[in-house]
Length: 249
Image (cartoon, rainbow, N blue to C red; front, top):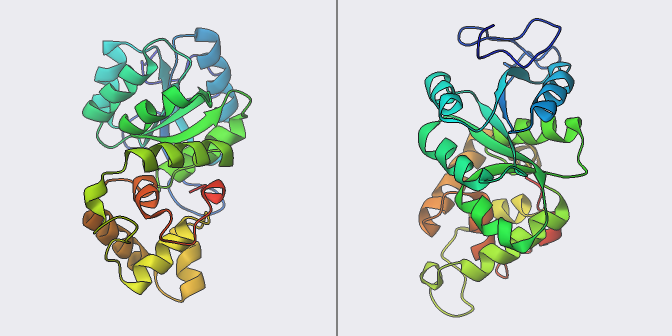
């Protein structure tokens, strides 16, 4: 059996490379995802459930080993679905970040404990599904992650935003209580990002293209010297009309 096939699934598995499976509804290519867990039962069960989705291609599953990293590094999937309950899961997420440049990491079995949050953010985990989450929650989190949109519970998002705000460098603002220099359009867009709207939703609301929204977002990230929207929102919180509990993407 090919090491890039899920373990095991009765239906034929998708293999790398060359299969451009499409979402039946949208016609867009489905994200290719690989599952990592040190529990074989989790890998088998999750592979079986997610294989039924018409929005993802589950291309493999394996334990957190060097061999798995080599496979991921070679084939560069769109997303890695990571069991956050594993011992040393954050360290493995950091290895994925450093070696599997294309892949977005989505963590399942996440807890809402404060001490995990900063480590997860530093490892650039792009989606969180709590311990009581469902397979559908994982699908949604992966779809958002490959669009560079963070998906997590409102409670988790609020706690993460508070943590990032506490760590935000003071140098990003011009002085105590003063907002960074953003254009009115940039402030408008980030205010709506903080309300949980996607690029497409913001574009429709403002009557501009999604590409224009994306360009504004990248300019703001450059101005603030950060890499993620959540980091930017943490810095801008207090200067924009943003409710942290509404942050979902």
